Image: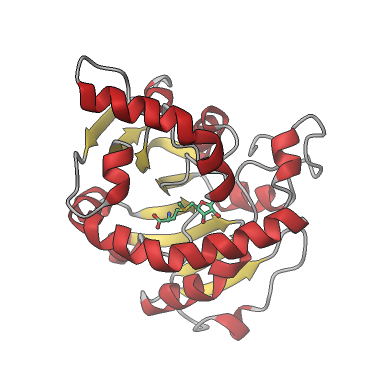
Length: 271
Ligand SMILES: C[S@@+](CC[C@H](N)C(=O)[O-])C[C@H]1O[C@@H](n2cnc3c(N)ncnc32)[C@H](O)[C@@H]1O
C-alpha cells in the first residue's frame, strides 16, 4: 500500500499481490482480455452514467490523483481549468495509449513513468510546454513498489477519483485508508462504485443478493479481480471523514450492471 515510501519490495505475505504481480503470465493475458472487454463496455457505461458523472465530477480540481482511469473516461467531466496537475495510477499497460490521447485532447502535457524504471522523456509523449502536467504511473495502488514514492511526491491531493476501481483492488479498506492519507485536510474523495446488495424484505433485492454470492467467484476470475459482492459503501462510511455524501443511481435503463448490483456515488471530505 501507499504507506511506506522506503519499501521497494512487495509484501511476501500477500498472496493476492503475488497473484496480480504486474508482468506475470496470468496478469498479462487477463489485462489484455479486460482491455478488449472494456473497449466495448467502457463507452456504454460512460454514456449511461454521464448525467451522474457530470454532477459528481464537476468539482474535481487542484492537484488530482485518479486510480484505475483505464483510458481516461472520467477526466472530461473534471473542472479542467482549475486542475493544476493530474496523476493517474493504472496497472494495465494496454490502456496507456488511449489514456495519453485523452489527456492530450483535454490539454495536458503527458509524461509516463514505468514501475521502477526512469521516466520516458516528456517530449516523446506530450505537448511539451503545456502548463498542466498529467503523469501516467504504471503501477498499482495496492502493491508496494518504487512507484509509490512518486504518488506521494506528487501529493498531497485536493481531489482523488475512483470510478469502479475499489471493486478490483485486493483490499478496499486498506486502499481507502491510503487514499485518506494522500488527501490534503479538506481534500475530497470522489467515488462511483457498484456494491453488494443487502438483504431486505423485498424479493427482488434478496434475489440479487443471492445471485451476487453465487456468481462471485466466477465473476472475480473472469472480470479482472472485480468483486461483485463487496460492501464498499459500508467500508467508505467506516472511516472518520469530515462529511460523506453518498447517493444511489437506482436502476439505469439499458445498463445491465445496475440490475445486478446497486451503484453508489458521492464525495467524502477529509478532516
Ligand atoms: C472497471 S475498471 C474502471 C474503469 C474506469 N475508472 C471507468 O470508470 O471507466 C477498473 C480499473 O482499475 C484498475 N485497477 C485495478 N486494481 C488497481 C489498483 N490496485 N491500483 C490502481 N488501479 C487498479 C484496472 O486496471 C482497471 O483499469
